Image (cartoon, rainbow, N blue to C red; front, side, top):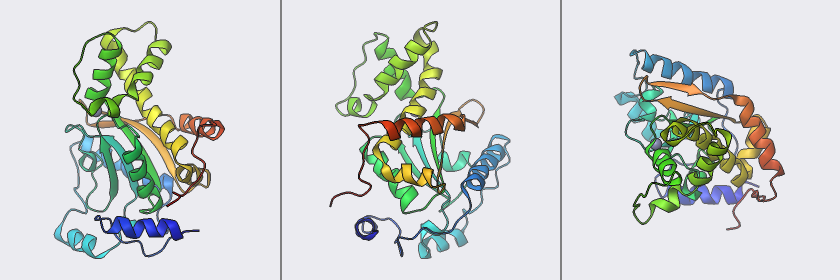
Length: 257
Ligand SMILES: [Zn+2]
């Protein structure tokens, strides 16, 4: 059953991914322990006491020789914002986390495929969708929905278009709020949207969560404090249930070619 996945992995290896020796899952730390490592790393970073581990010459040499799937313990879908340095804020180093980034941490086709690679081939036991305060993508879309005229370059609407319904939903849920006051709530809702999209589009991700091999968590990085605020895990469970019931969900786990 892994033949197609392995064939894909071989193709991907030519593009710079580490080799996959086997389709079997690589034994690693449990999802809860992996999440705790991220929490501990962010606590060190926010306290101004990072250890900057796994960033020395020995680690560089190891990364060149080894399969990242034996080491990396988290996949992170984050915004591209320069104020959100993902490895730094979790105080991790080389070959520790598989990071996927785009403006607005949107789970479009490229990001979703990259997340599938991270959880299915790099075998990370945790997937974090990381939004952040003062997100430019969420701010821009919120202002557009509020009637401001914004000129966007040719490809940006394709990227951030999915945030429009997020903002509209936030406006409905918080009718007492107006203008930029909506942005923090839309930012959190956008994290849930990306998790929901990942579940709807990826049977592999759904299966790994159901089987207990993967924990998915939402989080918001606070630029002013350097702290990650972890969102309620119960919500993730309800989003998975909704995705399972969604008739528009992707059904086939593997690509046809
Ligand atoms: Zn952002």
